[in-house]
Image (cartoon, rainbow, N blue to C red; front, side):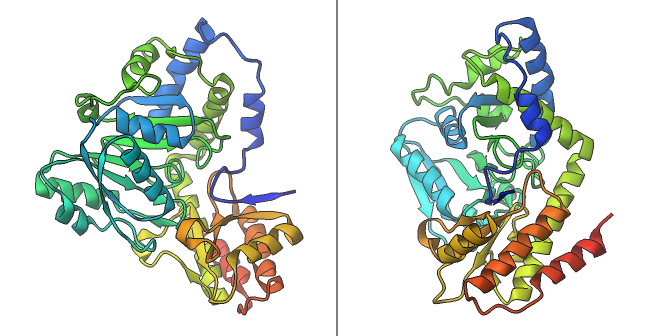
Length: 378
């Protein structure tokens, strides 16, 4: 059995695979309308919103673009923060779309500093772009504090948040936290293959349509068609079957319990890393990710070589260091369809691989993790 422990795409449970294997139905027929009208309210619960959520046949990158082109106009200024590789890519997209980006540099070990949000706001700032959980670093930004900084400043800028690797894995509250557009996708915490992109939309965002060109990404035809259970274009029917089953699994476990499980597995992983004598990339405990852990290799040791050894010897894939972190870290994904036994196997493979790659680690990381799991288990 291959251990897929990258931070997405994640393992797809058998129940979801079987749901996706159902025969395709007419996406203009009444059975499909019933599916959509049942599915969308349940999807809103994952975003913790009462408002519209639109579903695209796309990657998360498409949902990034939809968030920008539906709310902004050419030449608008957006405020963004260098928290990692994907925050940087989203900013590059904004610039290519003709937006003016005020990009605040960062060290990739910290999330967005709420104090810097207020410091860098200008009268021209139309939107603030934040990655909630940076997949390349395992660092979470404190979205409620960012919202509070905007509110203290009395600033009308829209708050756009990427939850691509946190949706369904980490507590996230679109309405309560005052987010205007939340971006998500299918292949991480929602336990699906790639292929669905999401936008959760506040009334404020819907009331401020920008003037950027858009057609496929336009929210309004989507929302209008969804009211009757349909889409303005061909949807990813079988992925929607899988989404319905994934939501059922999350409902059976309970959303709070899903988040608690991810929190617990993340803490067990960090305990193993510390016991090995290695360092977690995230420098602020308030910003630890519950979806993945990025581990720094000591100077002189190539993290990609560690990953190669682990793949060849133990048939386990770990996430690579991206961008400026290439060769310096490896990333352990512990999100989506995941349990204690899977984590034990993952950490056992990592510990054996670290030794096989010649890293000077201490013994007992797995034991520290297992002790924590035993102490906190049901």
